[in-house]
Image 1 (spheres, helix red, strand yellow):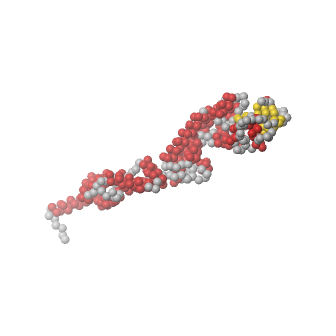
Image 2 (image 1 turned 90 degrees about the vertical axis):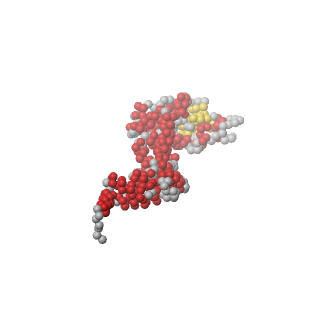
Image 3 (image 1 turned 30 degrees about the vertical axis):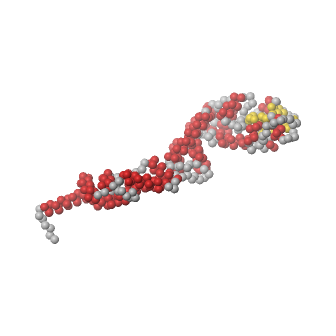
Length: 424
């Protein structure tokens, strides 16, 4: 990894590598150094040189500073030029130039002259072997990648504070952050995240991982079984960095899992997903599960728990045999609940239909199928017994049609017993 560190400060170098801080630029002394005389050094002999390439070799310069050699690039568009230096060896330079080619040093400077020129050291030249673009462009890409979880790196004022502190081998004090416009423009959660991550990157990384697991679990619980990784990463990152509140995050989970509710999906999330959001949800199958459960077991016994509804909805969505498996399970349950009806193909609907009519005939109302009385009638599976149950319970409950029917029966019995004969 490229590192912008002072030569003499080994502690800063070690701290930097641990925290992976990569400041993009430093304040430099713009006093022009003495103009050195270019020096040409002819090829050296080596038995086993270290072979590597460098990006954009036409833009690279070779400097000799004191007793050390460097590959140097200038920060693009910097005025005065800001040199970025990678320490190298004569053998490496010879390999870069090619067999039989001379190695020409653009500058030969003292350490003091190099410091006056604002030269900054970024590590060893071998680190450039895997870089395919101008090192400064690669560096800014690294900063942008880091800024996904450390958004303050996009702010030049905050970044300068971090760069200066890194060069001094220390952490930025909270009081320093508080003086920046970035700090003043952010909420308490965003500020706390900055302090947490900059003081303890390992804890910050663990918080990001935990948040990612939580996002996956939250989406699964909401019925989203195949959320893309980049979706979960973005949502968890927005929550952890404090950009989203817990309430807003929860609303986004709902917006994704149940589009029918009409909640707006976050613009940044949509941009992250390329403008389209296509995830499979269980919502569209949950009604199917509930309807099948009620058809086979009825409203009283088929009131499936939400977790079971979500589980079966997921199976139906992801498996072509999911619905058949659910119906087989419900069929077994129906046989166990109503063993009086031996035909396993009979659903609750098949069983209940005639007894609904009996209920309506005697009570003059639609049957309440969650009433234990209705379940007793189903289990009795006997018309005479059903009539007795409805009459007895109807009288107890003051059902008018039952009371009137009972009164009429008493009147007929009284007239018959008193010898009253009705005219024909």
